[in-house]
Every structure is written in C-alpha cells, then in structure tokens.
Amino acid sequence: MTARIQLTDAAPHQTMTLKFPEDGVTLTGRVRVPGDKSISHRSLMLGAIASGETRIQGLLLGEDPRSTAACFQAMGVTMSSLEDEWVTVQGVGLGNLQEPADVLNAGNSGTTLRLMLGLLASHPDRYFAVTGDGSLRSRPMDRVIKPLTQMGAEIWGRQNNRLAPLSVRGRSLKPIHYHSPVASAQVKSCILLAGLMTEGKTTVTEPSLSRDHSERMLRAFGADIAVDPDTCSVTVNGPATLTGQTIVVPGDISSAAFWLVAGAITPGSDLIIENVGINPTRTGILDALQMMEADITLENPREVTGEPVADLRVRHSHLKAASFSGDLIPRMIDEIPVLAVAALFAEGTTTIADAAELRVKECDRIAVMASQLTQMGARIEEHPDGLTIHGGTPLTGATVDSYNDHRVAMSLAIAALRTRGTLQIQRAEAAAVSYPGFGATLAQLCGLG
Image 1 (spheres, rainbow, N blue to C red):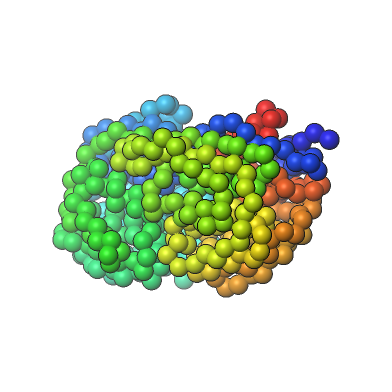
Image 2 (cartoon, rainbow, N blue to C red):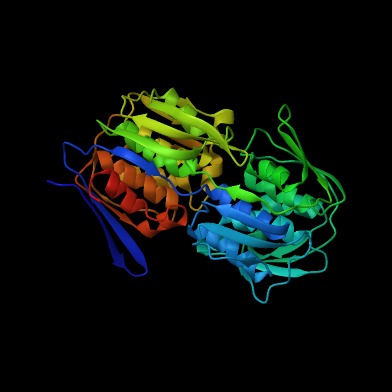
C-alpha cells in the first residue's frame, strides 16, 4: 500500500484524508516553514503607526496576518500586496490612524484584536468598532480591557465584554504599572502599544516571561523600552517616536514544531528545517523535546534583524516521557497540542500542567486534543490545567475534527504518521490560518510530491 494524503472539498469545509503503510513512511530532506506569525503581525502594525516606509521580507501569508493588514488599511494605511517578496507599509505616524468607514474585522486572529485595542484606545476623540469570526467572538477580552480601562480607556461590549462586537472611544490615557495575572504576550503587547502615546512610564509585570517580540521590535523602531528580566517587567516611556524599518521575518518555530515532532516519532527520519527563529522566549518546545531525549541539533546559528535564527535538524529517536509545568509552559503554549502527539509515542506517562491558557485559544485545546486523540485510541486524562498522556498505545484510524483550530488540525495530521488505518480530519482548512500549504509540504516530505 502506498501513502495517501488527500483534501476533499465539501463546502464550506475540507476533509483531509491520511493513510500510511503499516510499515510506515520516512521523512527526509529540507523544508522551510512560513514566516513567524507573531513577528508578521507586529511588523505590519508597527510599520503602520511609524513615520516613513517599512519594508518586510518573509511575511506570513496566512489568514491571521491578512486580517491585521486589512484592519490597518481600513484605517488609512497604504500597503503593497502581501504577495510581494518585499511588502512595503507606508506608515501614518503615531496618533494618525483614521476612523474606519465600517466595523474592523479581526477574523480568527486574537493577536490582531488584542494588540490593536491598545492602539485604538489611545487615539483621542476617535471611535472604532471591532469584531471577529465566531471563534474569536467567544474568546475572553477582559484580560486586555481591564488594564486599558485602568489607563482611562472607554470600551464597551456585550456578553461581559466578549467580542460581540466591541466599541472603542479613544482617549488620552494615563500610564499605569499593571501586574498581569497571566504570562501573555498579547496582554503585555496591548498595554505597551497603548503606552506609546501616553505621557510617562507604562509598565507590565508578568508572573513569568512571555515571548518578547514586541519589546525587540519596538526598540528597533525607536521606542524607549526597558526590560527587567529579574522581575519579568517591561516599561515603555511615552510618548514615543517610531521610524519605519527593514524587517526580515524568520521561520515560525510554532510551525517548525510539527516537523520536529514528525521527525522525532517517525522511524528512519532525518529532517532539516531551515531559517527558524529561536528567540529564547519561544524555544520551550525545543527544551521539552530534548527533555524527552529527542535528537535535535541547532546548525548555522545567526542573527537576522535582531532575532536569533538557526537551522534545526531532527532525527528519529526513542522518546521518553517527561513532566512539563511552570515557567516552561508560556514559552511553548502554542506547541502543546503537537507536544501531546509526541507524548503518545514516548515510553512512560507524560504530564502537562499549568496550561489552563489553552482553554481560551481558538478552541478549548485541552478538551479537544484529549477527545480527538481518544477517538484514535490514545489513553489521555484531561485536567483543568493540562493533560496526562500514556505513551505506547497504538493509534487507529478514525474521523476527527479540528474544531476550526489550525494547530489542532496540523497536530492530528502529524499523529496520522503513526496511525494504523485511515484518519479523516474534518475542517482541515483551518491549517491555512498559520500554515498555507501544510498538506502539500507533508506530502512532499513523505515522498508523495
């Protein structure tokens, strides 16, 4: 039997059908993953509010960055086609975003919405309304509305300030020192962006360090940023002056994580994933897989536009179970679904704790990964803040559902590499949110393309 990967349209959704030989496939070669989603969002946003032109190479062409671009274009920012090798953004300067003619739609992108709220709330005497798709409208917004309100923002919404939609009247804000109850780059970045036009020092302190792309990029654009790693605090001194920059977006480690796990669990595999961002606030997945004794090496380390980058080589290995919790979790929060897949093929029992944040992502990723992998025969126990995963149980074909979550869809596809029988993933088109062409790349690495 030959391997088979097939996408079938059944409007408005797609089903991905995966079937591999019982003796398995081998993944070999080199692959480049799409541009980092977090950096893509921030390069578009900061380019939009800077003075002068910003040039961006390697921008992720997924649905989420397209939502960011569309929102800022609706507020008077001129951008070249996102399909261009170099995307140009003609910045309007801080404080000069226009009131849009219609409701701003962030689509499925929580990053677009939460970061943008900080900018909208700090534009005095302007009115904005924001919404998103069904998934985004169900996600909590109080975590950014609360600190913005403390700064003097006026934001209204139905359903306890869930997005249905939200209305924002811009104000001149006051600086605050906000102690965030969660380590969240979206919360931190929202407050820092609000502080750009606020007189004085705006500080965010987190319980542990979240990804620091905003701090790095704000400093590159000219903002006065101070970081205190001992207290996990970041301060912006406003008002700021931002100047357009040239940005090269590295490959997204969250996308690379799927191939890292695929290579680690598939016998005979030897993959090199090129040009991956290895920002230390994002490399929790590397630490976690190495704790499981995965064979991963970093080759050709270098720095590109202020971000550390390397080629990642992964070879098949016999994984061992491990326990993950504490400060490691925020550094790999988006990669936990595929880490759960790796744990299925590890010797022993893996535990994941302190990850309650997964319940308020595009879907409840704890519940969904537990339920969908269980349908495939996995032994998984769900907890309020994580999972217990028993390795070594063979997986069998089934019909599963992505729940419109891109990371769930791709994680289930990676599990199919070691599944007996046919796996069908419903709503597989969700993968395009962060990884257009994921299915084609999987086929290529399996020798089918």
